[in-house]
Length: 582
Ligand code: AMP
Image (tube, rainbow, N blue to C red):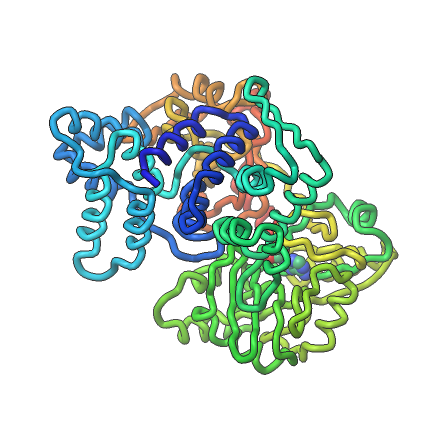
């Protein structure tokens, strides 16, 4: 396929915000695609070069792209940088500068989607001395043969930020529209941008089957290839298999224990909610693999876990779900996630790291056991299997602590016990619930203490890029200490892009612009005046901010125009909340 055709499709997708229209555009493309190209194309249309579960990142910085644009167009990096400041999107910069250049020269040859895909996939493996220049060369080569519109999307793909708004839901539906067309006859009304399949029931069944295949494979590229080759038979073959990661089940939140009972039923299983990171553990014969929640493989980073699995899980083949929690190797005290997060990306001195920052694996679910798919089995049965195959060893590999009860008082006792030993809270799980990969279904809910919100003042911001250019975004927040304001984090979540949906970036920009004290590149300092209420999941110690603390997952709640600077939350409150968290 010519890359210019793909670029026009990207442009069409970018132009519409309607999901159904996007789906229609993608389905037309899929129908035209040859079988040997389908998996690449499905990745490219999502702006990806590797499937979701693949840990490989392109890791190309803005700076490197600026240099590549400069090499390809002969325009100095400083000028490219200037353009970036005005346009706010390196894709648009490349498009403009390639356009300029192309008025003078002729294109060398047509780019194909294949060529772009293959070249860019080489980037992560370029390492060592001279690798930066080598990477610049690879990108510049593509840009030299790119037409202006192609340059826009090559650059955005390189930066892993395609901005055409294609969600996995659109890909899923488009696959049904494209490949089961005869079965369901989807009628798309171009004028109204609506869709109506002839056979709604059949359509829904197929959508669900495709979704299920994706949940297992976490790669629409592979799902598409299988469907194209085998039609409906593919669904029978896309089965759960130890060794290839699946999307994990997610949980909803409940306000308190009573609500938890309402949602998951009485009695239910309560479990400690451990504060570590999710680990999916696979074993097939002797081969053990470990994946993170994002399905990155981290087997090498956790050699001790591989040993525990060999020794303490008594089965030949399985997929387990667990939470790994770090602890201090000297005192044995459990540590917050932050302390061990460095292990996940670690490439060197792995054994030393394992000694200094050991983890305990808390197993809480099993998705496959001795080749049998357990997803549709009730949770109580899955738990019974775990109890049978696991020989718990404290500080190594254990079963998640569990209490089955329908009694609120007992549940409260269990919840308090969890908080007392420093856990985040509890999970409540429906005993009959199945394991639904990739979904935030209500078979399990988490209950954790609600954190008091903070009133913080905005002291800085950044000029946005792309869709957000022209607006101040990413607001730097500060708390108060003896009349001074100390930074405690940044917030960008909870503020709306559209004005009629709540407090918008535009509205905040209007309020903040007159208060700008200093501007440096894209960042601005702002006179403390605008106070906002902020929610968050947790307060952490942090050397990054002057207050010594940072907020985890901060979220804008509302403007507090009713408050004065003297009402801004005091550092003392932050400290107390930090201490009281656990
Ligand atoms: P959250 O990240 O707040 O959405 O909470 C869900 C996460 O809690 C899961 O993704 C797991 O990583 C973690 N977790 C800790 N303990 C458990 C448990 N006993 N059962 C399920 N998830 C757990």
